[in-house]
Length: 497
Image (cartoon, rainbow, N blue to C red):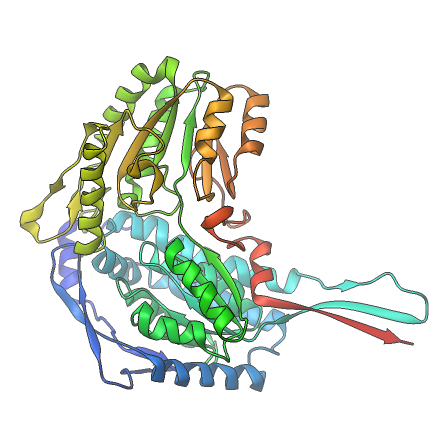
């Protein structure tokens, strides 16, 4: 871990080289139109640069290039063991540039530098390395056939993948997509969020340095309604992968149907229940986890534990423990290594969060912690971690994804009621259960309609665990070997001997 101080990071922030152009066929280039958009740091409101604003013309160039490189076989037909070696070099380069990438991430979207450096960058390189390591260890199948026939079941790269990634974990979500997509031999056109494009743009050059051929990874910064829509409607994109809001996910499915029936894999919103029973093994640990589950990354987490379901018999004891635990999560300058809550990504998101806090008041919930914008004098976009007690599951703050540090506390009286409240949502991304009863842990865990269920912890798992949701939280899975299914097509070949 680095020993850099806030002063060190602030000095580096003044001198860091920020690339703002698109990346097509191994070279940085401006948008065809020459258009740009301002990249504003939520840390202090300063202009970081003017980023290429790509649109349909750029999408045409990038997809055409990606297709040509895919058909050439320079990457798609390379032996898996050779692709593995390149992917591992790619991961090593991410690690070698960890401080630069972490700084770009923090300046761009406001997360604490300590998180960027200790969580995001290592997890990103791990995703690339893990996927690369796996690719030469995945075997195809031989069907059970008569002696004079041979049945082969093989996986082939799908072709050109368009990846649209979110602004809350820009580098990490990018690498969750790039790891399996590139390892399986595809070409990728990546569209980072216009709110946080900088690490994706920098990553493209590192891919070339690692040995990934030009055109295999193209990066198009820009807006969803321009270049994002162009990629989603493109007739020569084979697969579209997306992480972001449920509203946009639904629109992308429509675009796929209106174009070429491209495969669409979506990781969308969440309103995850964190269920604490009276027999939880350690209430203090549960309280601290509940605070972290809503305050980490400023609550800008699709799996944030935004609904805290507490058994009524312990609620009066437990809620003050969570209120006390949330005091350890204080907004501060993200370039200070001691800061654990940074700035919300931009003014729009900050105002959206504040509007939900007002809705909590309007609907009769009881504010017990936080609730205000802070550090306004910095020019940044900071909101205190906030807790509402006395919340009903029908309130807006309990139903809608806020994507900010706002926690709703809901009481329940029985196991059945806890499950009913937990599942009473359009989402199904994650859930947690705190109990000392092994049978209850298993039975409630099975009853929860969520893609990830954590027992006596919040946010467990690693690269071996598939990540994705039920219901309107999406389809498909990131991470694990199951992610490879999104980037390959199954082929049955039957041979008469």
